[in-house]
Image (cartoon, rainbow, N blue to C red):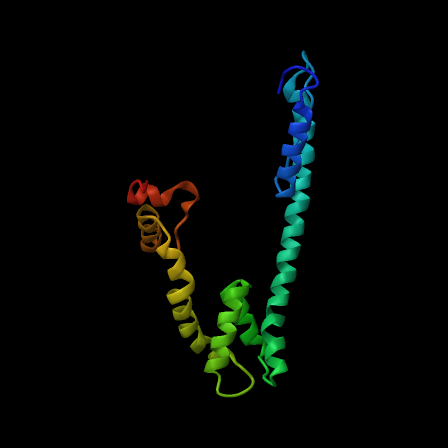
Length: 182
């Protein structure tokens, strides 16, 4: 950014950087004096930014593992408070099925509980409860979100569903196979 001195460019840029960093965006601050090679100035800053990203990714992965461990507790502890045990295989199945997503944990826990005939809740109870948990999510959680989609977004999702689990949309396979969705 170039311009007259003393008109607030630095204050503006600092504010933009602070706002970006507050949302988790990685930023670089460099000053490029006239006559200096921008790549020579930029390269060391990019290296520092990559190291920060690497540390952030490691922290995120650690947090994910820790939260995944707590997901089982989120099912077992309330059940234990009511005198019901959930065996380890059942907890693992619920956590694996829900990927530790809190709302889904609640649904699977509720439906496994409702399906179980006695304590402890077993993998068989979780399997039977999965049918009703999925139906409940389809009729409320997913339905509400699907209803808010545009027709184009709905066609895109249908194409993804038709392509199945082997779908890799990173390279645009959905659009390549089904045409343009805009």
